[in-house]
Image (cartoon, rainbow, N blue to C red):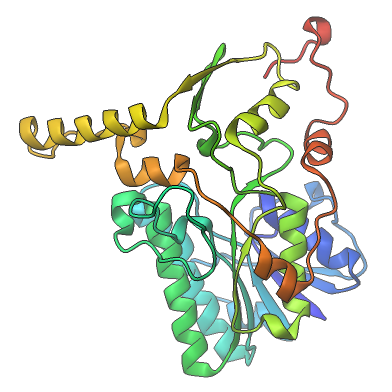
Length: 340
């Protein structure tokens, strides 16, 4: 197959291109005009060519994607205010979808996110799967949730109108080299690691495992029309993951547990104080906003049944092996010269 990968120079996109090439596909890597492709690990591969375009503009897009069999849409804006993320995610996706229609391409793999699910009103220890409710008030959460939900809705509308074969993949927390710590693990300082609900599961997926799922979705006819969560087997608890990561860090941060009920009580107090004293005009820290707090730390279950059954996906590495790949042979001795 000839696969187009958007966001090919990004953290996940680089692995998607590598996975597609390793599985025998031809790849057109879509990168922004200013990207130095010589720094990319697969530059010069015989089955690779480039499309240098900016998805925020429709100029040249139809020509850039002509002749491919499927589009793997990985690109998205993950930072900035709601306007920047809407432009970098939703407007960019709309431009891509219009170009696909113009070029006669009807197979799309859209990489979404676990952020689209609703967490605040779910019971603790409930299961988050592909049938779980989506967030109904995304702007209360953050700009990323708002833009990813809007992106999904836009892709589904185009798919329904034009009878496309759409697969939506929702990765959990993607980790890999240079990206092993995330917001679901609490708050980290130089010396301490404040943990909340340390026994809550963290829906991790190693970046190579996530890339494999994306390419498998393009190869698997049964994936058309599906929404599939991407999370590795047996997600670790917050404490379990922190203990594994900490051995690679120097100095090792001391874990400081903060009870989940205490954190929830602090958030409720902050919300009521803001409402009664500041008329809801104060900007609360993210960790004290209930819908964000629950999205990060509520203890829930994250099965990957659809991922395995529909795509035939199996992980290549255990969590310990994946972390070893992230850190290489990096020692944690005091004289190593490395810091966290």
